Image (cartoon, one colour):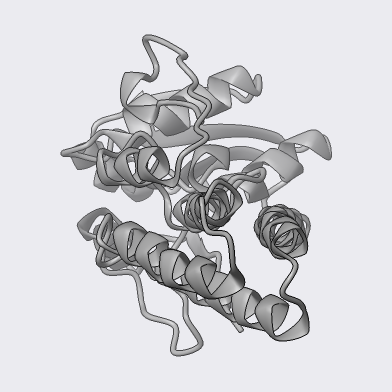
Length: 261
């Protein structure tokens, strides 16, 4: 797990073998971003069952509830975290209904966590491929906060759209607002774009209106705080501001959406 708190100055990764370490990493924002937190939670639940000292599936069931409760407390508002843990609970119930072999149950939980990660990656790629069609052939685009690979475990959602468009040959230059107060734009999005060789300019949040007023931003690609089946509108101040300003300019705003089933 790449420590996002240390970026962009240092690239430090950790390997966790204990669900409590994963829980601490989520709580202390070593990892952030809704989809990435969901993947981490699934991995944490699997680690808990994998390394549990339980000698029967009944004791393992008791322990799995303890693991889930510990992970749930890390980020009470994280939709993907609760979605992932509910999915892991359902899978545990299916496995214990089918077998009492702890080895098979443990492996089944590990396989499910890996599947969660694979599905997140596939979703990112689908969003990127679809959204890239709407990007201009050349010119400036803007994103907000960080909805890139760091936040999802794949290529990114909103930033994945820009990444795929760039790989398709579109000549894009990305305007990256700093995103106060945690500076996800300045620390994370700018770092991702630079690593990917995508041209960018880092701007302060209060410069957004200036660049939109110039009429040279071809598109804004951002994401909602969460997207359960009852998808919410963007509520983060920077995204709301961009939406408000976009109404007074010619820029198009695209909001990438993830649906959980």
